[in-house]
Image 1 (cartoon, rainbow, N blue to C red):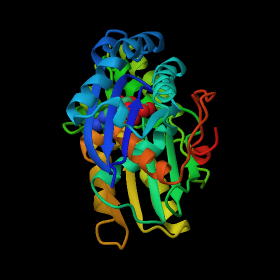
Image 2: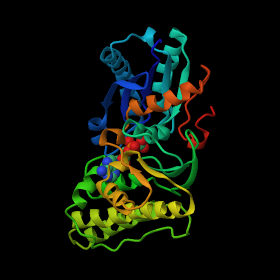
Image 3: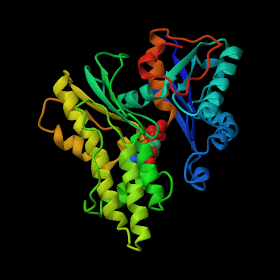
Length: 338
Ligand code: KG4
């Protein structure tokens, strides 16, 4: 039987990536990161991100084809992250895929970025439904109930900032480099929870809020500086991280009580957080709910996760016309609407 080959592109933020899946086996996953460039500005500069994607996209495609030892003629479908993400950055990936689709007359598969983060976990284990996906990233924070394969229902989400965004902004006020999440994670390991910070949003729902917590840390740091008092960065990192992570864990516990859930899956950049990984594992250890923790390479943006979702969509023939555009705020529930 002929091989089924999917080529996927990810360019939603600051990583340009191309992956190739051959009969569901990952044969290439090339990632070019722009982090060093954005570090100079303390965060991702959207215009610079788009330009770097343009410079890098052909290189990652070429490298992936070489690694997989195939040519573009062998590809059966071209997949791409359509959203959510930075509009200009998304356009680079989509235009590349449209061009390839037009030249080689093969279908386009548009993929939702957060579906990608969830399905990245399939590289380590089969997903069992109903599952609760805890999507925690730089741009999104959502609890997604999946009653079945490719069925998504947002049952809780942030009312303002994403959790990763709050880690990055708190890190910035503490003078730590971008992306700040990993720096806070490291410092918190050596700190104590000594600072009294508010836990916002107690409305009993499954929603979260990070803007108030972030502002409280920023105000505290400014006040201490004005009074010429030193900030204990390790303790403040620990105090902030405890509240930020415990807020999401509290909603996960509530969700598990409200819905029938067999499995919990962590997804997105903040799922690299060591305290979150330890706590979720510890809390559900002796229960009949299985917890899947993604390997660290799956927590950062990559096209392998986009290719994984695309393989499911390919089987269902969920293809897009050449007129398709990007959607920077695409909802996961609308993953098949474009
Ligand atoms: O998934 P991702 O690339 O963002 C989006 O696609 O939106 O995740 C990046 C986010 C950044 O905010 C980064 O600070 C955070 O993930 N992050 C972490 C850790 N590693 C990355 N946050 C907390 N602890 C970490 N270890």
